[in-house]
Length: 226
Image 1 (cartoon, rainbow, N blue to C red):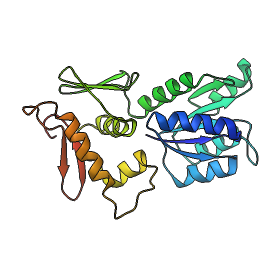
Image 2 (image 1 turned 60 degrees about the horizontal axis):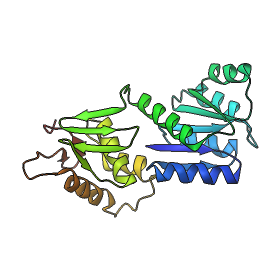
Image 3 (image 1 turned 30 degrees about the horizontal axis):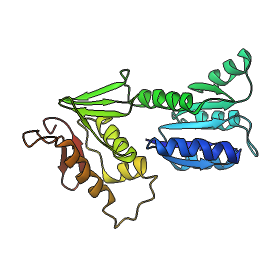
């Protein structure tokens, strides 16, 4: 999942970015509203974490401009304002969720996870494909009841493929959502990651493959190669 964090406090920016990246998210960062809006106009994000009190352009103006432009990215507003009127104002301007400072990083991560589920229309926290179970709350994976040990980035790649179950997912899409889009065009990082993921999901020799290559197109995850 690719996220954008727009926050002008260097300390908070660092702590939130570190927590998100440790959880396997690809994260872009902006320190003011103008830079944040430019990144929004230039990229596609699953979730935007947007502070309200920003230099150059406040967060509510950024939100208004992106909604006027037809952008439907899910937005989590961060603010020190804690009145009902402030929360209602932000939500009516097009925010999807609201978090008041100071906040626990665990709560922010939980809210981001919930918004990511909305992006793909998922209500359940456990995604299932055949005998594969992906618990998006615990960020744990099992296949045939056996745990699958994945790194944060491997987990993010698998979750993305599972959410796109049955669809062809191209290399550029994986690079954009999992690797911040910062991948050498000649690199085989995506192919290597898919290879490792396939190996880890092959919990026994009789287990059918879950990730299928569509030559010249990309990858499809499905228990029958759909």
